[in-house]
Image (cartoon, rainbow, N blue to C red; front, side):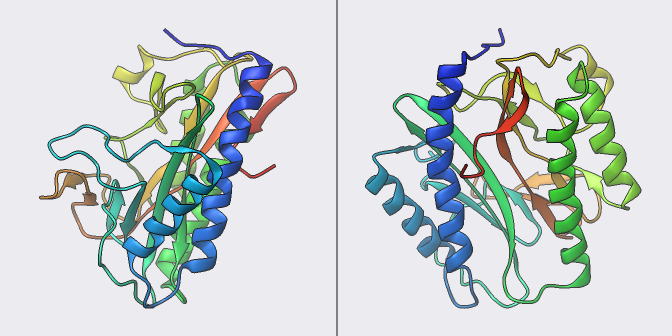
Length: 255
């Protein structure tokens, strides 16, 4: 069942989203050669504590409960990377995904960051990934069903010569981080059976994951980190977006 949100509930989610945006601004200012992924994670955790927000990721069940407030994935790692003592180096491509709950409502966002100067491929990948998220948000206000948006997202990535990760998709969000519906960034036969209308009150975590090479991914030995099978780089961009009577509104951009 898809849970549609009232305008007052969307505004409550925006308050959580502002803290998530603040976390990303903090990370952007800290990322540099020599910092560890663990240091980035601790900075975000401290921020959540200061703002009275509950982290969404820490303790998520799995073979090993997720141990951090951020997923930090580097280079060929796509998503769900575990922060630790890894030192970031010039040229790394870092994906940071984090979320929090404030007064019972959730916000979730991911962004891809360069560490210093990155390769032309990584730079192009970031441009395509960010543009793909922007396309989805704009088309959410123009299309009737999500499959119409997802088809455009997939076509744009393919035209750029990259691939769309299919094993992991976006999701509805509200009082829980993961709610119905699932939100793919491509169109497949199985997904069409789960297609849904874009109507006011719908709130989605839209999160294209774009690979430089193959779409195929694998889960590493830590039971969480997802990496590309060909070891080529990947990017991840995500915003929490509400559909309103006035069109789509991004809840995690800090406004």
